[in-house]
Image 1 (cartoon, rainbow, N blue to C red):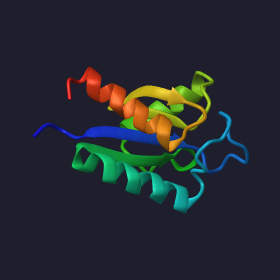
Image 2 (tube, rainbow, N blue to C red):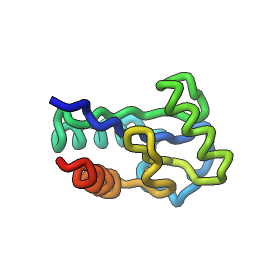
Image 3 (spheres, rainbow, N blue to C red):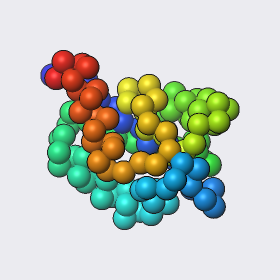
Length: 111
């Protein structure tokens, strides 16, 4: 079995407004749980999901924290979706957009 696809959702719970037009309310535990549950239901163990709060960048792997800082320095709006460490979407995220990005990556990876 191959390594699971790593899906990182980087957001800033300390920001009073969403940078990229909102979408998922990542400050809401319920929204995070909904997203996580449905991604697990749809992809099982083939996808590993992490949520990284930019305002407390100690919560995830150093690679993800570095990615979050890099995206902020470039002026890209959060939330940010990265797949296997590569930025895929920035700004307004929804479950449908996340699932679509995963499907595209699966096709690229040949799965």
